[in-house]
Length: 318
Ligand SMILES: Cc1cc2nc3c(=O)[nH]c(=O)nc-3n(C[C@H](O)[C@H](O)[C@H](O)COP(=O)(O)OP(=O)(O)OC[C@H]3O[C@@H](n4cnc5c(N)ncnc54)[C@H](O)[C@@H]3O)c2cc1C
Image (tube, rainbow, N blue to C red; front, side, top):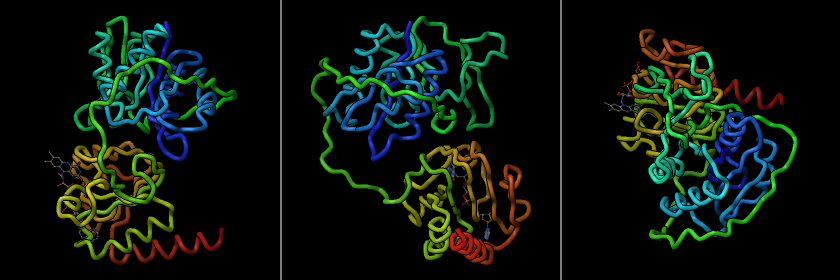
């Protein structure tokens, strides 16, 4: 019985979601696990601190072909005799986890948000996941001998201990890629939204794209990423990759500042796991206040300049 964890390690530093998934897998296994990854990432030894005993890396493999990555994971699972395969519930993991489950005839828990819950009476088997846009929780029991889990980013704390992982190059054959990327355009240059610890987000209450300079300025002063509600992206006031919610990106930052956003259920579905929510809205009856830790009832065009001034003062004093 062993556990492997499939992670996407592209980027300048080890992604937070990858470290979370390794931490999760190693807690689940009760000891070191084997991590599987691909590409040219360096510094993979550091995953040892999160609980990886070994990292198997398929160098030269790009992330575009989910079928290739599936073959990689299934091959490593067979070599390691894995009975639990953990993935991240991100774009890469979502392309791979269901395929791996189908190939291995395994039960799949998509979007687990915690370790198996002993308090529900079936320790070791029941996995928690959010349903109905985060309004309810379901406990899912996996009855198959092999199980596949994809873990929601930002739902598992990173554990850090001592040690480094042994890094091995993958030597098997996962076949040729059947799709290739012809052109890649970066959507933004700031902090990637799913990785951000602080997020400044705004909605239709900002009246138009010409007023976003102050939202961006506050984000810059706080070192935060920017986000928006869906109508804002639909109206092309902001790029679509900033849209958070049920149909957009799901985030769980330490602080989510929502400016001129009503707090519709579909918006909350993507942000209600934030650790602290601060809402700025001129309507005291706005539903978002019910989900807020801090609320400012006021006009965004008066409140924002004051917040920017306060953030600048704080930065100057540091
Ligand atoms: C299937 C489906 C999926 C959806 N998915 C998403 C999703 O993923 N994400 C998402 O965001 N939405 C989603 N929606 C849309 C969602 O239902 C809401 O319509 C949307 O979130 C509202 O956006 P908003 O709060 O920016 O705008 P509005 O609802 O128009 O709210 C604007 C808010 O700004 C406040 N305001 C106005 N002026 C000011 C001011 N000067 N200062 C301060 N506050 C001010 C108002 O009081 C109001 O509360 C979805 C809808 C459907 C049907």
